[in-house]
Image (cartoon, rainbow, N blue to C red; front, side, top):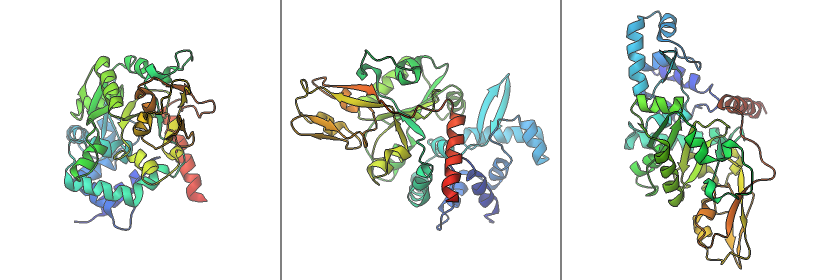
Length: 355
């Protein structure tokens, strides 16, 4: 079977802000072959980043509209095309590898696909994720552990942000599921990936996730915090997702913890801990809780602001309540929208490539 259609699809996916670069091994094509049939790959090549009705896609393909609509619906369920509804009409658009094909494969992933994903991450995708030096995620701690005297922006209030969402979905973490299938990783909670709004509707309608209410979503975040997971969402002011990430499996955090990369390649730290000398007992709990090893304990705990990602896990685990979180004095505010974020990532990546 010719690889031509998959090579063309790889090229299309590589034009997204977080692209899909080639490797010497060709593992990226093996992943596409596992995800798409040749016909599905041909249809995916006709999709655009902007949502369209099936009629527009069928016209581009010179195909039958009802037949193309049926196939697009099936692809959406498989996580191969994004489906949304506007004005009572179903719309479809192309999706990137991440956030997209990778996460949407959470119901389909098996040991073989997990191995291909890991190989691709090691060979190419970790570099691709950090090449722009623009963090794709912002980190927000649970509000209970933020200094109550500080005025916060809405995007800094994780519980209020969740309660304002019109639709919420939860799904399994594909990063931890991949690691489990390959016989490593951790035993932290699996069903922790939260989506909101249009993204949540897609997860629910495609059967990739389940619909939940705000109270359950907040309970999931708190359970994740207890388990030592970092609450990270897209680095934009609008809430679209919350990934509860572990340092051993998360695609972003592995670059920081395992490869020693600067956190700024992946995570925007909005907060930092303030440690009260009069309350700290040097018990070491925060040392164990810190996912990026940014804390040292001698007579009292101290933290390295360059390594700290501002997750608040040290504060939530402190038995003497000696740690509170404050907004960093010098921060890069999240982007106004996901579109602005990804446009900036693409522009910065292109500049790096041209150097």
